[in-house]
Image (cartoon, rainbow, N blue to C red; front, side):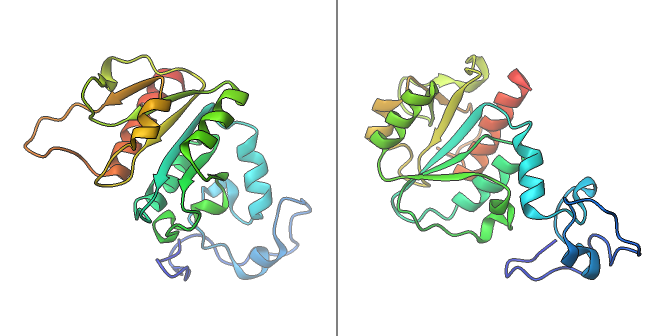
Length: 206
């Protein structure tokens, strides 16, 4: 596992592979020699990043995740990390191209991430690929996520922390779902909301 600066934790993973090394193109010679301390499943130990991505690509789910990034939302890294955990097809970042990768904990190297300048660009892309846009926010008129039948092929769109979904995203969405809350706060963290919504898709389709 790596810390927030990308340094490897020597207590995680495995050390150098004993020789002779396995004759398999998926393995990375550098990792075989030095050990593999990354935060990956044991089955991926010593595999190169490209080999891991190629394997994940054979079984990715059909939902996508999009998050608006107009004010450099610090939750994007968490969303990417969670999308990797639930094997989302892609993460889409709408707005500013630059985002804080620290929260992703290096998982962005295994997760396809696509950028769109505007919500309209995202909507056009969704139309060409046959994906439904589903907004996630506690806006007036939203449908409780717990009672909504999420489409199998969809993009779950999240607004940034604070403002929530933009008006443009609200207009582009075929439906907007809210996450029912029972306490005193008006909203929950965008990264947490993304995890709840992704898991709702997983429970329905995976």
